[in-house]
Length: 272
Image (cartoon, rainbow, N blue to C red; front, side):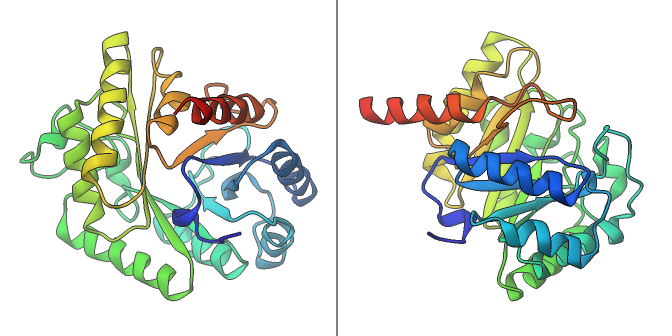
């Protein structure tokens, strides 16, 4: 089995793990593994203990590659209060503890861009005040340094953007190509689908991303009309489907149930 997230057969099924305790995280990893996951999506900021020993216990238990993410919110969704430098250091600690990769958000090292766009509006994807998109060359250079450091440590980087708005196929492809220049191993983009037209646009977009972007891309939509894209887009070529093994109070309910997605994809592959 490969430990490279970018080399997993598409679509990889990521079992999302959110837990306060080390024992709880290990139990969730076990459930995801037996449920058919091909990788683990570990929310670092939900853990109450994030020292290297605790991370080694959690990550070391998994026989699946672990993608470590820090969305700066605790188990209850309350802001965890990390500075950007602290978020990066926690990523590096997770890699030292054995994580196969990190999910580095597009606003990393530029916190103001988490909630809106502050650059020069000269790209198709900068229209409509998107979140998590940085065009500042100085910030991008710092992000590239982090990516290079993670690569030097033998791990991979998933570079993610959650613009928080609906975007066209052209805008998303342009954004993916722009992000690709930072040399991530996987790109993740999540836009909003408020209507069925937005949802259909996401299907068209996923096919275009598969055709035009060399780096593996995971793309789906959130919003009231977006849930179906979390299953269909991986079938159309998205690299990762983010799934929940079982729902609890810490779950993102929009994320689909792991074993159901596994069965859908396996049956779709028979047809394809």
